[in-house]
Length: 258
Image 1 (cartoon, rainbow, N blue to C red):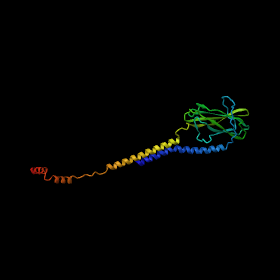
Image 2 (cartoon, rainbow, N blue to C red; image 1 turned 45 degrees about the vertical axis):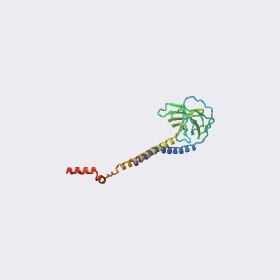
Image 3 (spheres, helix red, strand yellow; image 1 turned 180 degrees about the horizontal axis):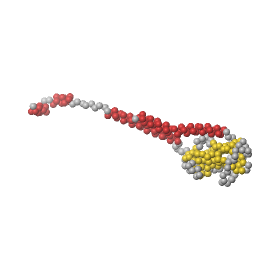
Image 4 (cartoon, helix red, strand yellow; image 1 turned 120 degrees about the vertical axis):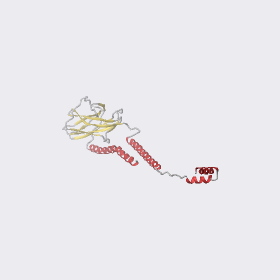
């Protein structure tokens, strides 16, 4: 019984640890990819204070302009609610003219219904942020989702607005899922896992002790009973009563029966 419970516990422990191993493996692989992407981009952007107003209309991307997005030191794309996060928007200009980056903006949507807008994040303007033809640059974007946003997966849409030959354009450099997490509290994922593991070990130890007690009780019940004879005690009793009135009455009864 104890060995069977131990095997069940080991199997459950492997199932609990499997997601953590997958997360570590995915994060290590994604971090290598993000580092390679950052190396391929030259940092030329400077953050400004005044944003040029192009209205609420959307523009088409310019031909020959490609974009890429990297979450530095955050390959899992985990964003803590209410805290500032950073991403890098990379722009590669293969066109014939230089482009001027105006601003970067982003928005948060539901994953199951992309049409539902949850939050418009703050737009970040840039000054003197130009990307000449046949060159590339990266621009930082700092944002923070609402601290009241419930933890879970959401879609983040990041857009970079720029102009070429005095015509406005925009390109979506990121359209993917991010994970919104609560601010660090008393318990973390690691501490919850360790507490769960400790409770499981205590339960396993209790099952093992219970099995040992049951085995001991079964052995005790199976022990043979020793019957103590009464012949010796009867003989000694007869010797002690010999010559008394009890022995004489007993002998008289035996004679009458005969």
